[in-house]
Structures are given as C-alpha cells and as structure tokens.
Figure 1 (cartoon, rainbow, N blue to C red):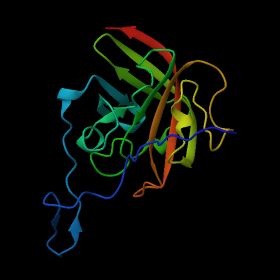
Figure 2 (cartoon, helix red, strand yellow):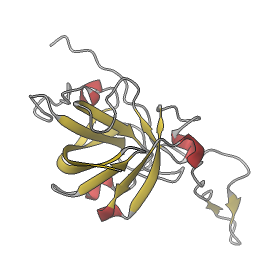
Figure 3 (cartoon, rainbow, N blue to C red):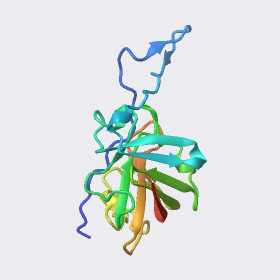
Length: 188
C-alpha cells in the first residue's frame, strides 16, 4: 500500500507520419524503413543471442533523443552494468528499429550480454512479467518488484537486468518486463 507509480516510458507506438513512409504500387501505406542507429551516443552494446540482436545502448529514455533513434535506452537513476542493483533498459517493440520486438520469446537461462569499454557482463534471463501497467515503476527499482502485480519480481538485493517494452504489440497501453541476473563479468 502507498506505493507510488512511476511512468515506465512508452517504448513503442504508431509510426511517425511524414516523408519516410510511402505508398506501395497498390496504394497501400508501407511502414518507414528502420532507422540505422547512430552509434556515436552509445556507451554499451546489448547482445541477445536467442534473438540475433545487437543494439547500441544510450543514456536516457526519451523517445526523440534515444528510443526513436534506434537505441535501447538506460533508465536514468538505475544502476550501470555489473553494479549491485538494477541495470534497467527500455526499447521499442514496434517501429524505430524495434530492438525489443521479440523479447517475449526469451526463456529462463537465455543469455543477454552487455559490452562496455571496460568489461563484458553476461546476464541470464530469470523471470518475465507478461503485462503490467505503463506506470509500474517498481519494475525498475534496485530490487525490482512490480507494485501492480507484487507476486512478480524479487525480494532481495542482487545484480539485476531489466528489459522493458510496450505490450501488446502496436500499442503502448501496458509494459512487458524481462528480468535477468548477472552470471559473469569479463574485463576487456
């Protein structure tokens, strides 16, 4: 009781209107091509072998400055890779490169690697919260636990990874959350 909800940002939504989209020969609207990420703002690379995903990680979760440019965004105020607490990331599920399109396919023990200049951190997927409120800020706390669905999350300190995206697809109504735990760190 008394838990406040913090917005978990919209990480997908309708494609932006404008010149990037066009019409096919039949006149049907076709989606804009996925933007190539600008690697100049990246401070880490997220790799998810099961999904054949390799995407840059940038600081912040603004749509215009980070997510809509093809990055996965690091939630300000959450820990960095390898630190005790929760390294929390947001990514689009649809549009803008849709890096988190298939995170719902991740299974326990799947690996997620985060490469920085100093080390490679490997996390193992542990738990999934298929749907929670868009404002369920508990999922990105240092000890992540949903305040909307308190039977989902953790009870004790650890080294966590949180991946968030919108659900169901093509909406931003709810959030899908995948959690992992740090299993190794290898200096570079």
